[in-house]
Length: 185
Image: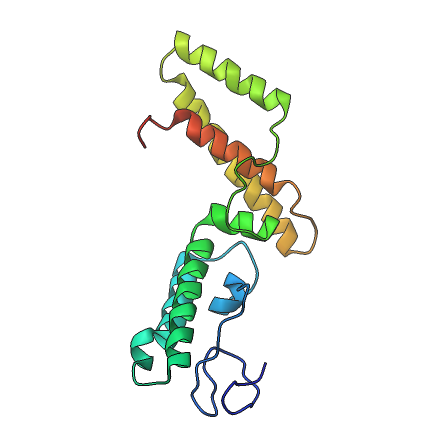
């Protein structure tokens, strides 16, 4: 990409030659925005550090005396940087993004198989007989699903697997979390 002002090659949000702020990509990749390697296993501190560095670089206050094009780009960059942080900071959203290319969950999501849904029905029936039993089962199952997701990504990061199962595991995780969440949360 070349700078809109001086036409020199640009590798980041600000041209090193003339200091002009470039427009962010039309469909920004959160990893590219924050300059992070495309992987699931990211430390929260690493995401936060990169966020702060890029946010300081493109903050609109730095461009108040610049042309309106730079001011508009600063606002667009700020929105992109904030969205990148939201996407990469949350492991579930990060997993969804890597597996599907979108941080937003499809309202329908993948269809849950009959065996899983039967198990959830059985949990509800057991809850009627033994109040509180569903919460402990759900906690155990959430830990199992999180471990499965972690293993899938560990294999993927090592170049040994695909992410096809991630949307299903995320849908199960969401279902179980919703099952035990108190009404009103």
